[in-house]
Length: 277
Image 1 (cartoon, rainbow, N blue to C red):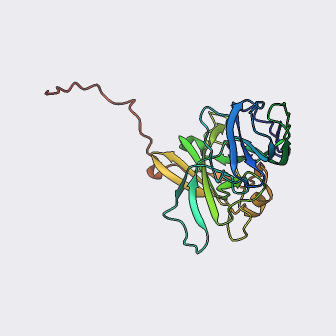
Image 2: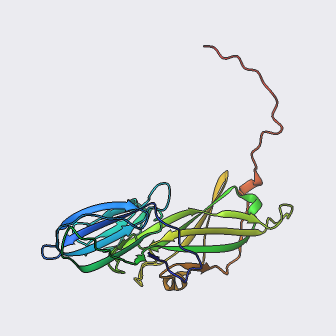
Image 3: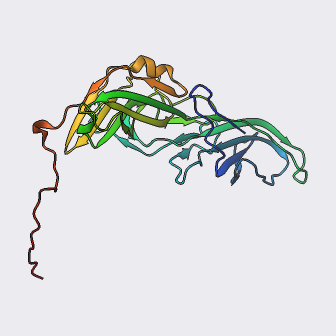
């Protein structure tokens, strides 16, 4: 069973395609059995003994964005996504800043001290998988939307991974996530181009260190690149540990490219050119 966060206003992501497990021998903590099964129910044959069980999944989409490491011991088991160090990052002594791919919905749980008396008898074990990544969403009111073709948002200061057995994270890492924003104009005939920018994304949550800010920067493209940074929302974002709506009260006025040049081909003449082969 999946237990999803109830504060973000979103329903569960549905049943995963597959769920993975690792059984660890209690005394040695050695990973004795690994595998996966379809959906949320499956079986495995094991020898009698006492085990700790790790169950986890992020297999909800066509391509799974999550990777897993540290699985030789459930205490070090961790999920993360593809990451690239930021060359232009502000130098820090103990924080690594990096661009990171958005994680998929992620769930996991550890159940300790499972006693198997006989490998020839059926033992049914039920667990509730706890949510490890969370959904965020925001709406930004703006004018000048007729001046842009695309809008991309970067949010900084996010956790880059999550441990599967508890709510811990790597506190010395800060990730920047990128997402495309939907451009929603109220009226296509409005000369001021008023409307909204809407975006939603999954994340492991905002890093709770006070010296790591959660800034939002917008990149608009229409021939040129227009960059706008929102006012500091760090205090609000840090309260959203398990997803939810990021409230943006700021109103953006997006100006067109310098000179107002809008490329087009409507007034071009047809020209025949001989190509020598």
